[in-house]
Each structure stands twice: as structure tokens, then as C-alpha cells.
Length: 298
Image 1 (cartoon, rainbow, N blue to C red):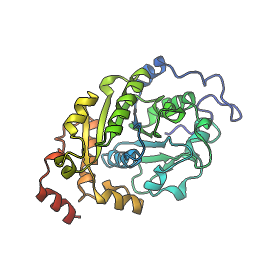
Image 2: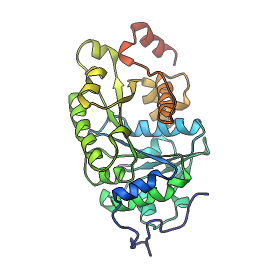
Image 3: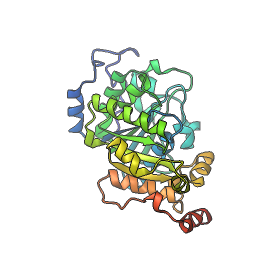
Image 4: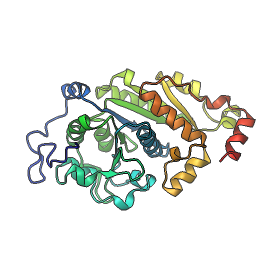
């Protein structure tokens, strides 16, 4: 059963109580003994595709039979419920839920397509000061026994929204695009997550929006060079795919389109983080025939 009791962070009459103490490294160690893995999906730079990856990875894990909670941590600029096509069901947000003002069962949206997938949206009207790392950490810690995975869509940058998104995290996926600015920001983000207590072995990279012909023309950074620069394992390489753009426009995760190369890669990511051995798709080795096949097979 999901815990839908109000005041999961010790709140009384909507105000944080004594339980809303600092979420320490000891709390994280206790959390690891529980059930869910908590992944935060982060980047220092905007526009790299964090929300798309969060939505599709959550859907892919659910299709694999896992119980998944997605949380939009980008307060004031929420997008996760829109990409998921669930915005019409969104009534309450993560800030109100984590503060104990509403019950979890009232804020969580159960995806009508996959019953094991739940989404908590962010607020469009509040700002990031309405949620604290303490609240977010304790809120997710309380729910770890009810889910296999909790995925948090982090806002860009390294301010309060980022601090809230990484507070409960046991694992992290850094999303980077083949641009020098994105790579530099990702390196900074990795250091901050380690400083927050996330083990280096639990931090990995997703390289997104790769275009093989740009790499061949030396106007995009080679994925091998990205891995060397960041000194972190690469979980997946995701090509630029028009199916992703079309799916976001239609408010339907591309992973539901089994023919798409990106959909197959998202399923591979889900299987990888769930412990399976999966052969990665190496985008830069795709030939001209593969690119045309990907276009005309949609």
C-alpha cells in the first residue's frame, strides 16, 4: 500500500515539524537498506533533454514490470506532466505534497496506460523556494519502501531546485549533449553530487542528441572524448531522433513507439539500470544506410 498519510515530513497544520531535520548522510545510508533506488536526472545546462529522458525512462521501467514514481523537481517551469500527457490530471504539486499540506494519494497521478507508473508534477505558479532539500529528502525516503524506482527530473543549474532534486538521490544520471559548454557543466555537476554523498560508482552519463554526421564533420564532440573528459561511465548514447520531437508534441512518450531507435535505447537504459547486461547502441558508428533506415522505418 502507498503511504498516503499527511505529514510524511512531520508537518503539523502544513508547517514543517521536528522530523523535518537536515537530511544527512546517515539518512541516505538508512535509505539504501530500503527498497527503491532514487535516480536524479541532472545537467548544468538547459535544453539537453532531461525531462524527455525522465518520462521515457520511467515509462520503460514500468513496461518492464517495475513500480515507478516520477517527480518533477522544476518548480515554476513544470513540463514533466505535459510530456507525459497527464497535465489534465494534475491538481496538487510536489511542494505541497512534500510539505505535508496534501496527501500523497491526492498529488500522485497514476498513468492510465501503465498502472505501475505514478507522476507528481511541479507547480507552475510557485518558485523554487517553496520546496527545501530537507522536505524532498524525507518525502522520498518515506516512499522508498513502496516503489522500485523513484526518478526526479532536476531543473538546470545548481541552485535550490538542484539541491532539492539531489537531496534524496542514491543514483544520478547526468545528461550531456556533444557541446563543450554542456560537457564543462556536467563535470561541475558530477563534483557537486559526489560532495552531496552520492557514490561515484552510482553516477553515470547519458549522451543525448547525437548526430553522427556532425561528429564526422568535427563540429560535435565525439562520445569517446566526452567519456574521457568526464571520467564517468556512459550508460547510453541517444541519437537525435525526429520521433522524439513528434512524441513530445503529441504528449506521448516515444518509448511507446517500439519502431523508434530512441525507444529501443530507452528500453535498453531501463534494462541496464535494472541490472541486465545490454549491448549499447554506439551512435557514431551508424552508417549512412542506418540513418536512412531509421528515417524511413518510422
